[in-house]
Image (cartoon, rainbow, N blue to C red; front, side, top):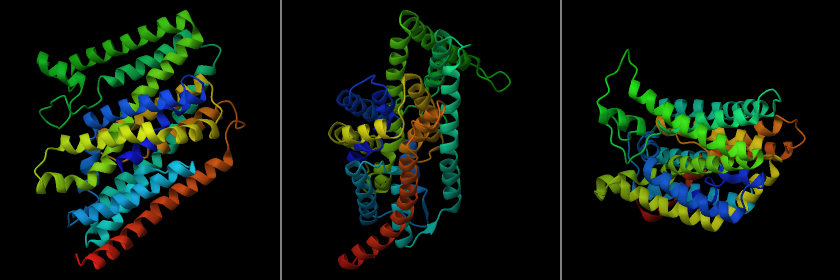
Length: 382
C-alpha cells in the first residue's frame, strides 16, 4: 500500500516542475522519495489515527479486516499507476475501510464522514481558485516579478514556521511546530490570546524566504522562479508524505499498538520505506501523465498550482483529515492553466478523471464490504 502511495499520490507535487522543464522526471522521482519519506516520519501520525480509529464506530479493525481494506485500496492505486489515471488514494482507502468496517459489524461514523466529505468538496474550488488568483497576479504587468514571486515565497516560509512535526514535543498535542518550540523555550506569555514570540518567528521565516528568492529573481527572473518552483515542489512533496502515509498505516494502528505494543514511529517508518521505494520505482510514469496531459504550464502557473497544494495539505494534517493529493494538485494545475485561457486544459481528461474518482469511492466501499465477507467465510473468521 505504501509503495502504491509513493508511486501514485506522492508524484503530483513535482509534476508542475516537470511540465515547466525545471527538473527531469527521474530526478523528480528521486527527490520525491526522500522528501515524502521524511514527511511520513514526521507528520503522518494524525491522519493515521483518523483512518485507524475514526471511520467506524463500535468495533476495531481486525488483522483480516485491515488486510482486506489495504488490498482493495492498493489494487485501485496500482491500477492508477499503470493506467496513467491518478487514483485518489484517500477515496480508495477511506471507501475500502468503511466497507470493511461495515462488513465487520461496525456502525458508520456519520460525524467523521460529514467532516471529511465537506473538506473533500471544498478542495477543488479552493485549490483551483487560489491557483487561478496566484497565476493571474503573477501575470499582471503592474506587479514586478521581483516583488510578486518573493512575496509568495515569504507566505510559504511563514507557514513553514507553524507546520506540525512529530519530532517537536508539545504539551497539549502530539506534534509541535518550530514556532511552538521557540515560544516554549523562551517562556512567552500570551497577550490577548496572541503569542508574540510565535509572530516574531513567523516574520523571521517569511523574511528569510523573501530575501532568498528575491536575490535569485534579481539575478535572473526565469532562473529565480525556477528555483522557487523546485523549492516549493520539495516542500509540497514533504507535505504529501505526511498526509498520505496514514492511508497505509492507519488500518494497522490497532494491531501495532494494542496487540504488538510497538510505538507508532515503527509503523510510520515502515510506511515511509514503502513510499520511498514506490516513488523511486513507480512514480516516473504518473509524473509524465500528470505533468503533460492536464495543462501546458509555464513556471509561473506551475508555482501557482503548488502554493494551494502546500496550504491545503498542511490544513488537512492539522485537522487529521485523509486527503487525495492528486485532487489538490490537479485542481491547482487546472486553475493555473485557466488563468491563461482554456486552450491548455484537456476537458476530456478532466471529465474522465473526476468520473473515475467518484467511481473509485463508491466501488471501493462495495468491494471492501463483499471481499471481507468472502474472506471471513472462506477462513471461518467472524
